[in-house]
Image (cartoon, chains in turn purple, brown):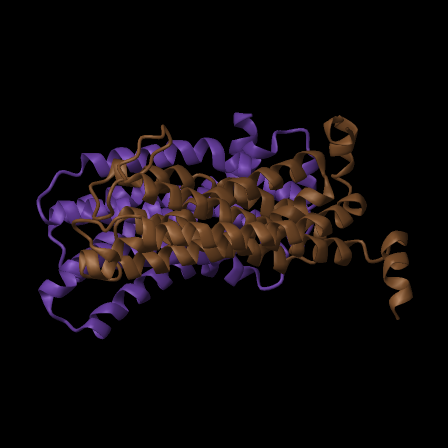
Amino acid sequence: MIEVLRWVIWRDMTLALRRKSEVLTAVLFFVIVVSLFPLGVGPEKNTLATIAPGVLWVAALLASMLSLNRLFADDYNDGTLEQLIISSQPLAMIVFGKIMSHWFLTGLPLVLISPLLGYQLGLDPDSIIILMLTLLIGTPVLSLIGAVGAGLTLGVRGGGVLLSLLILPLYIPVLIFGSGAVEAARTGLGVEAHFSLLGAFLVGAMILAPIGAAAALRISLD
Amino acid sequence: MKYFTKAYWLQLSSPKTFYPVAGKWIPLFWVATIVLSLIGLYYGFFVAPEDYQMKDSYRIMFIHVPTAWLSMWIYIVMCIYAIIGLVWRTRLSNMMAASLAPTGALFTFLALWTGALWGKPTWGTYWVWDARLTSELILLFLYFGFMALRAAIDDPQRAARASALLAMVGVINLPIIYFSVKWWNTLHQPMTVDATGKATLPEAALISMLIMTFALWAYTFAVSFMRVRNEIIENEKGSAWVTEMMGPKK
């Protein structure tokens, strides 16, 4: 089973890295959306620092949601997905591998670029570290939950908008505790509770989401 | 008595048998809705004593609490139907799940709206972002998502199964709504009546609330049976019995 996981991750990474522009789109979206806020709200430092946790988290959430469409779409269009489903390996494990490589390509770059954007919005160094950590734990949860929605909306008319309607409500808890932790760090409160809950989301989603996404794919390709 | 045999109840899961049975029950549920609402509102507005803190404004509770209860219960019932449809592939349970969703969304909206109207005189604001209100708002989005996903997929079988899976994922939100007033320190007051039956209310107010709940359940059944009859006709439009029924009325 680990063999399958490694194979799926290697395959998806290779495919994605051969079309680098697609990988960069999510990160560029994240950077541009965050850069719009100082222009829209005004360059006042205190205001920006106050809204920074929420802005960064919402932008990360939208960026990771926008890239979800591609999670299964290419394999669905060229028929690979059907082959994966009828293979003798557990589908949930294959899906888990796909989600992991998706996160490496869209979630991890967001985590790595976030300190720069946090600094841009005037967050202090301690809050920036907390921001990175929350994104590190939180963005995999987003990819995992999103996979279920991506599976359900596969090949559906107007799938992109529909996907956001299905997935964003489920993203809300992650958003609340992710930005809550940064906000708590910024105002000097404890962040342990937020981290515990984010960790619990991650563990729960890692177990349940691949099974749910596999079921969704079976329904979509029935 | 035919009502006590298993065969009678199993027969009802066939759309063809259920269609006339639902038609017979709809008027009964409408009568129950009207009678029970009148009794419940009479108790609420005239018999229940004035609250010493909130004065008369608390009387919106007799609509707010039942709609909030039902918004959660209908989701559970809808989800159970959806799971039955997913597991046994029964067509009627999928249609029932689809018929319940709009009513559930309506009650969620009403719970939020009446809550806002109640919040203005007691909290001084229509809306606060506390845990109970936010999670109830998420419930509204979940209903919308369920209906939108169903509407977006053309194949009825696939639509039913996909939305069933979505409903199962969304169920995670229900305990969060229910326990939100216990888990977080929120502006929303704690439950006036909890599952163990302890109530912190005058008896007349409690009676009114329970009667209103039954009235809303009767309403739910009436409208969802009406909707499910439409669904049955639409889904079975090619079959012999529908053609026969619709035939002579040209």
